[in-house]
Image 1 (cartoon, rainbow, N blue to C red):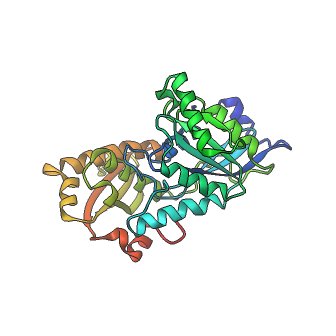
Image 2 (cartoon, rainbow, N blue to C red; image 1 turned 90 degrees about the horizontal axis):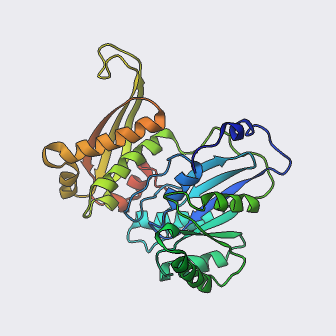
Image 3 (cartoon, rainbow, N blue to C red; image 1 turned 90 degrees about the vertical axis):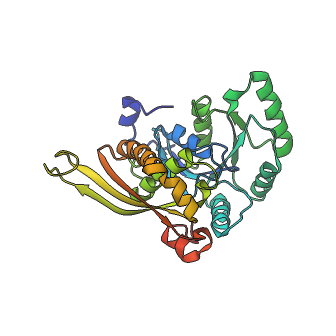
Length: 324
C-alpha cells in the first residue's frame, strides 16, 4: 500500500468530529499471513515473517494512523494445538486479545478449503459480541472463478452474513485499501490513542531480537526454528570515533544471544566455519539498519538452554510471561 502522501501526513494533526479509533485483533491459524498483512497495511515492516508456522510470538501492536482514523492492530500468535508451555501461552494470548478489542479481523486463506482449525476459531468468535471482518488472504493466487468458489465454501462454514468477506493479498497489497476502509467504518468514534508518528508499541530491543529470529527462521530448517529464542544483551549508541570499527561513523552496537535447546541445534546455527551464523547476522543487520535508520554493528552468540520452552522462569526472562 505504501506510505502516506504528503497531503495525508499534513492532515494527521487535524482531528475531525467523526474521527475513529480503536483496537483490531488479527486472528487466524499459524502462517496465514497475519504479520505480512500488518506490514502491508502499515506501509512499513515491523512484524517478522517467514514460511515457518507459528512465527509470531509477541502480541505486537502496530499503529496505523490516517486522516480519518487510528487503528491499533494487534498481531496475535496463530491459534493452534499447543505442545509445550510456550505454545499454551501463545494460544492463550491470542484468545485473550479477542476480548480486549473493538474489532476482529479473521484472516483465512483463499488458496485452501476451510479446515478444522478455521472452524475452531470461527466458533470461538461466535461466542463473542464483537464485530468481525473476514480477510480472505492470498486471493492473488487464484483465478476470479476459483476465488468465488473458495469464498462460497468459507461462507458456508461461517454461517453469519454479518461477517463481510474481503479478498486481499497481503504480499502485493491487492484489496488492502478496501479492507482498511472497512475496518475504519466499524471502529467507534474517538480520539487518537497514540502520537501520529508512532507505529509500534514494542520496545526497540524486542523488534531487534525479532529481526534476528526472523533470519533464523528463513535460513535454517529441520527442528531449529521453533526451538529458538533471541535475547538482546547489549544495545548501545556509539559516538563517532576514528578507532571504531565503523571508521569514525556513529553507529548502534548490538550484542545478542540466540538460545536453542540442543547442542546439535547450536551446531546447525553456527554452521561450518561459522558460515550460518555469519549469514544470519548479515541478514539481520541489513533489516536493523532500515529499522533504526543508521549503521549497525551486530555480534551474535549461540547458547544451549535445554527445554527452555517449558521453563516458566526462562519464558519470563525472554518476555513470554503470563501476560503475553
